[in-house]
Image (cartoon, rainbow, N blue to C red; front, side, top):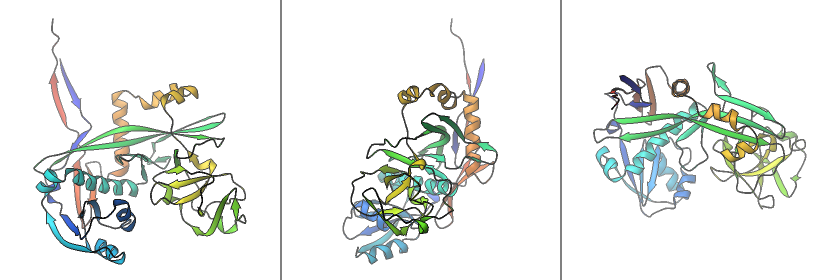
Length: 345
């Protein structure tokens, strides 16, 4: 008997190689704390990763140099780095730059990263798009469950610069409990459906519980797009107000955003957390969850192709943009191989 196996792996096209991308190294006169650099260089167009007293980047280094100079951080020379050097000596940095480019592509298509440190899996923030269902909802007494189909990525590199992209489906499960019994430090996700409206200007409360509200310090929900953590209700400092919230009407939860460590009060009705399979059983929704999370291979592959369609420009390729007009192009024709299977007596 002969069986054909389709793998969820895709190769860069013949004319698209990591070795064609221009990598640079920016010298720092002295080593800097990565957290400090992250805050200073947040939002730059260049992709970068710091290691010791070096910043490795793809893109224009002048924006980085200007921002560092404004903070009295001296920089030195800039040099081009060959792909072979990045692969052999800086492979973790090379992968970080790749994942940064992927993260930008996913964000552009409204996919949000997992709250974990390894940002290699993403879920669609929206409910549906292009007639593809991406969210299953379950309401039970005391809680609401959102089960979202997402994607996870991994890739292999070669000395020649070809990249092999591995893609699989990952199910994200989010639970909103009506009672606000979340522990401080617990990771949470915020699903805000009416961020376009603004009620902050009409809020009259100057304090909610023991947390002061700073009504002038408002910002959109995007600050929470990569997740947050429940804050201590007694924590000191100013907690900002989302512009789409009227705190006079809504119960709130104090959180600290993962990115930028912003202190925010959000409506409790928007707060979701994740749970394990044991807790799914305790909520009596494990059997329904399992049908979605553990699909047969053909259906799983169809879901993966549908999600890729949402981030790909066309049906033939997945293009991951890099700064300065550079890109990686993966052929969306799966790698196939035939395997002969013989039954041994």
